[in-house]
Length: 342
Image (cartoon, rainbow, N blue to C red; front, side, top):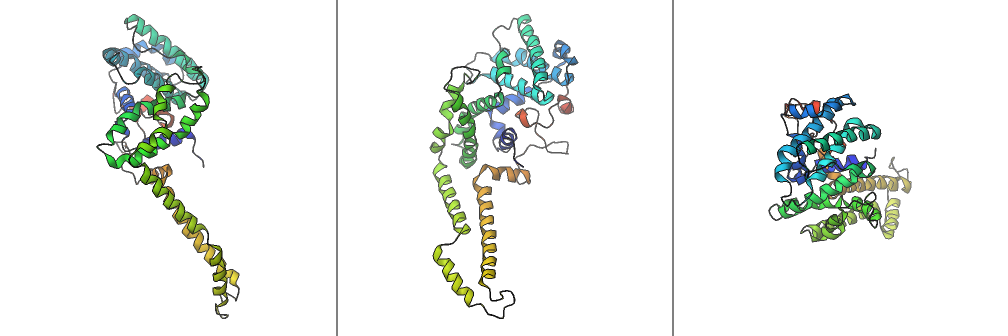
């Protein structure tokens, strides 16, 4: 079964050994860990009539508490990226994961925006993060979210390679997986219309995989290994013309009394082809496992990767609430009351 791009991207992101060091993940974790929401829940009470109303009220309450306790202190302190944009993407993706229906999301987001802007007005936080109205018109918002997360996360991890050289291969794979994302926006971004091309795309161009991959210290070695693997697979999948003739000569030397050969060289060739097929398949599988992003997912799925976050109370392995939300199988806040009581 083919994986959707959203699911594949989340599997790839979850499998990173340096996931907890990503700036976007740290931000989502700060939202997840916000507690003592009682007063803010009251401000969001009108959302209780919506589908999944209790969970939507908690999302709303976390936004309000974040604005009052964190964003108010850190706003305009020369952040290298726009925290407000990440906050809006977090809210929008949480609503989508809860409601699974565009019309329901539009209604919930519109009502939450009213509470959000009214809260800023009452608190005189006029310069703080505001909801992004036009997000509902961005049909590729998940790709925009992924692109902006990559922009936010790239530089700190690149800098860490000076201390953790062994993660270069993994970072190379992480960047390479963004090629299709950049292809999507390259087609759309000759336009200045923000409904077609995000206004932050220009800033992201510097981290285009086609521009940065060759500058990684491990790049040449990875390309060399891939060429060697491809060569081994090619050798295993076929034989030179001359060898076919010599094999025919060998076939004629097989004993007529051999019950398995029946004096027919085609049987011997058939067995040889089966053996070659097994060898080629094994080598191909090894190459996929070692040199492609799929290998990481295979290792993760079979339990060979020890970097996964687990449920400390036992039970199923799951993603945390602040994970990139397209693959969060437990999107409702009520699933986490035992971890972080409000």
